[in-house]
Image 1 (cartoon, rainbow, N blue to C red):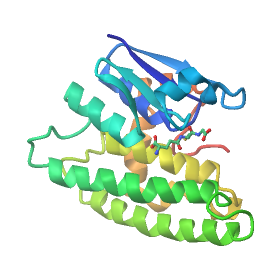
Image 2 (cartoon, rainbow, N blue to C red):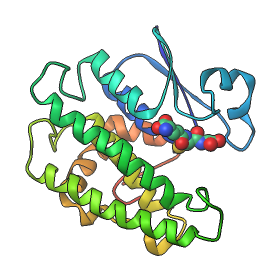
Image 3 (tube, rainbow, N blue to C red):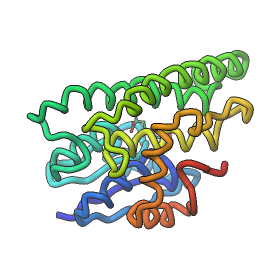
Image 4 (cartoon, helix red, strand yellow):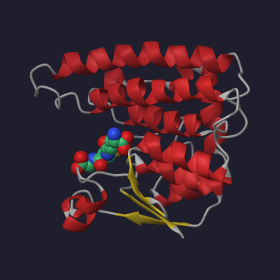
Length: 221
Ligand SMILES: N[C@@H](CCC(=O)N[C@@H](CS)C(=O)NCC(=O)O)C(=O)O
């Protein structure tokens, strides 16, 4: 079966799209219009109960949640992450879920700081998110700088792909431009992201999302 990935250009499905392209599995990318109401149609709500993306149709049913989909694809195709019984799996999973539960959540607060409690405290929400992102990205950068075998700098993993998406957003789309995060402050993360974005696979996906050039390390908002 050909996977079918539902998404919106430059939304979280971009990470799944990059991973799919790396697995070389057959897939179709379906782009929906977020402003056209496509996400809230009965058809899409049947795929994702909140009318969000990504949603991935697989032979085992439709999956949601970026981290779950990335991990499932890595396991299913035996690439982009240590295999389940590999001794490196423990460290890899720790960093991967550290990313989904810390970096992803804080990135959303930096981009949409009015969501938790309206416009009033938005600046404080964004500023707190910025500080959390800086300290938590520093944790991941220290780990990557140790060059663990499970986090290679010269070939992609789902961890590199997921982080690259999130740091793209935090550089390109913070609600307050002075709170943008620069990936160059995190050299080991930057190196992995730079190696990813120059791959023909990544450039192919970028073009489908209307992105060009250094779309991960030097994104434009
Ligand atoms: N926890 C979910 C979050 C998904 C999510 O926030 N999707 C956003 C785009 S990045 C979305 O679909 N927004 C459209 C909407 O809220 O209507 C995941 O990791 O997949």
